[in-house]
Image 1 (cartoon, rainbow, N blue to C red):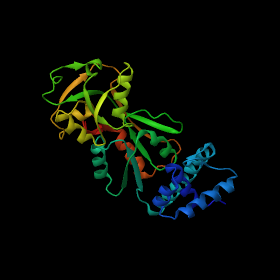
Image 2 (cartoon, rainbow, N blue to C red):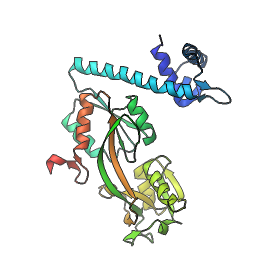
Image 3 (cartoon, rainbow, N blue to C red):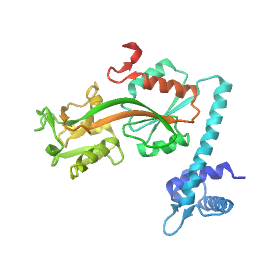
Image 4 (cartoon, one colour):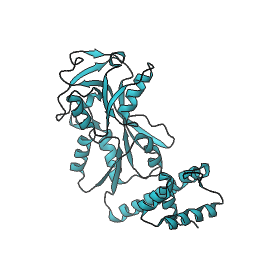
Length: 299
């Protein structure tokens, strides 16, 4: 019978594809971790990793990882369901997003309405969300770009245009609209690869056979806005950000392209057991009026 701890250790090695880094994260000795993986492979009757050069998860390992993630996810869901039933409480909701600036309104409303519920917030790129939802590492995920995967349910929250932000004294600041061709030689301040804003920027330019000129990459939306306001470069910013009371002093210009949009979507596992806290969070987020910044029922 497979040891649960060995399976959890396997997932860390599979994620990092590096024994010493995995051993450090797990706080175990590397020789011990190597023996654990070797025993697992012996029990399965096949290698799970290719070891030529650096460690790489092979086809069998990738297949096995999916089953292990789902199995451990189910066990964890069962543990949380029992704890919730015995304690007669709300339980915990684990919410992941690419950015939490968008979610500050519904999160505040949720906490006011359900102070006893526990909230865990996780940052995650969209590429990781489907796998971690199916593994039940997260209960809910909010993404600003499409996630195409089986076993997920979704609710569209907001579809909005994405515009151009510039410094107040930028030559484009007085324009009512611009095309992507108008921006061909402009310096851009944007997010790192994988973030929805960066993907949108790359996709819009690629459609015209161009590559954006990027002078700065960052992870913090507020820092990106501040850098744009200094005149370092221009950037794509969703309409929702224009209504922020704490935004940097920027000029906003419409982008004349029907594909320059963001679709904010809530995802959850189709077969996942959601705690009371998670179900209430789903209701709060899906009933939120993103344009008014309040629940729909208060309008």
